[in-house]
Amino acid sequence: MKVSVIGCGRWGSLIAWYLDRCGHEVSLYGRETSAHMQRFLKERRNDLLTLQESIKLSTDISVTKDAEVIVIAIASQSLRALLKELNSIGTKDKTVVLCMKGIEIESTKRLSEIADEILDESCKVAVWLGPGHVQEFYSGIPNCMVIDSKDDETKTKLVDEFSSELIRFYYGTDLLGNEIGAAAKNVIGIAAGMLDGLGLSTLKGALMSRGTREIARLIKVMGGNELSAYGLCHLGDYEATVFSQYSHNRRFGEAFVKDEAFSSLAEGYYTVCAMVRLSEKYNVELPICFAVYDILYNGKNASETLDELFKRSFKKEF
Image (cartoon, rainbow, N blue to C red; front, side):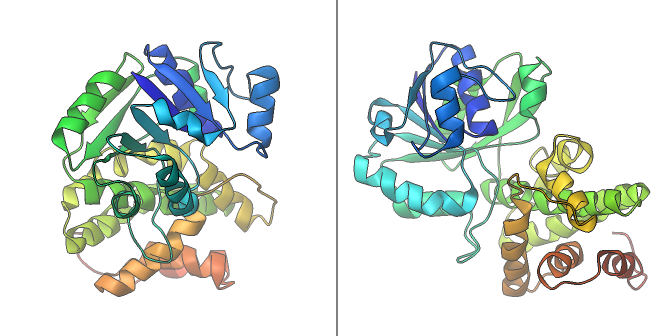
């Protein structure tokens, strides 16, 4: 299968490495101005992995013309602009797989909704979600992930083609729930980092429990299956997000409360804005999301805000 991967950051490059390893004909696209792509062109490596010689590297987005499948791994808020660029090249009869976790702030739309809105109507859209870090996959440590799509045939084909001993894919059964759950777990990851930074790591168990309930409520009101929050897209991704040394969102939250610099992308920083809007739109309480938002955007004291969160009025757990 011919596959073009768009996005040469840590996740996009890992996907290219992985799909080549699975036996597919892979190209990796990155903008000419990207420092990541310039290093790949010179050395075929970054700080985490080395790309096989069989992977075609390109700074010309028209490399996607010949691909049967286009896999996208970029910052979620940049997706709309990229899809418009892709559409001008042609996406007829292609399969587009979204490998990022986020919600568009302006519209509060899920990423697959944006793709359906912009791409050719013949294009099939899927999402690839779940836990895992580049460092672990590259070291041969396996994990389980999810592929979901409104089109069952597309979903089945991708799971069959992309599965290996390194990644076991499950068939997603709730596109809405999987996308919301996957995006929201990055916000929980930031909250976890804040707890670490404040020396309150013991509260991460409560954070995981209440965070999952919070997101389950939202998914249900939006029309999805609340059980999706307990699957691989959200709760199943907590180890990689709430505890891992590799989690950008957790590390960002910790750095933020310690007033330390952090330059890597933490998607939860943007997603929390969309979560606040969804809370208001659907009239659903999201106390953890609001706490993170207040700390990040309203200048609230992190210690006091998180303390207030855990001192909320008594209520039944379920």
